[in-house]
Amino acid sequence: MELGMGEIMLILLVALLVYGGRLPQVAAAVGRSVAELRRGLRDTTDLVRNEVDELADLDPRRAVRRAWEARPQIPADPGVPSESDVSAPADPPSQERSDDELATEDISLKSDDATPGDTPKTT
Image 1: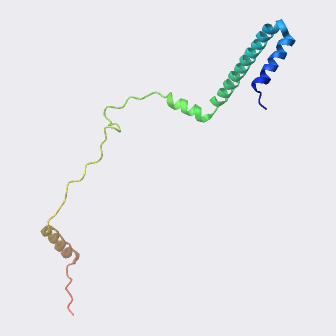
Image 2: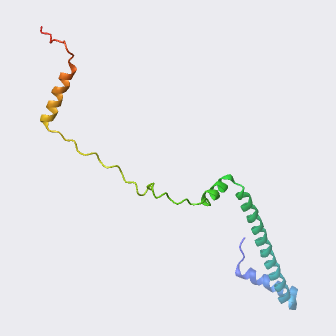
Image 3: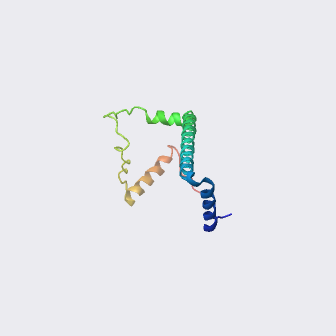
């Protein structure tokens, strides 16, 4: 249900006829009533918001978070490196060996496997 311009004009004309010279006083009273209603709604909203905030303060997760944020900051020990000072471990030195060294090591391993007194079997 929408009010058109003609309907609004009719309502204003009826209001003017009914209230006549008192129309400014009636408009001021309506304005004061609307302002008082808004103030009451704002006060109620603030009261409810404060109560909800107080209930939220009872949440143990918030209490732990506040305690964690309020903890004293302990200065770092100068003898202990901080996480930012520690770098990735260095790569071990390259141990590339030549084919001759690998072959010599392979022969020495085979000779170490033999126990004294073993004789090779021939078939």
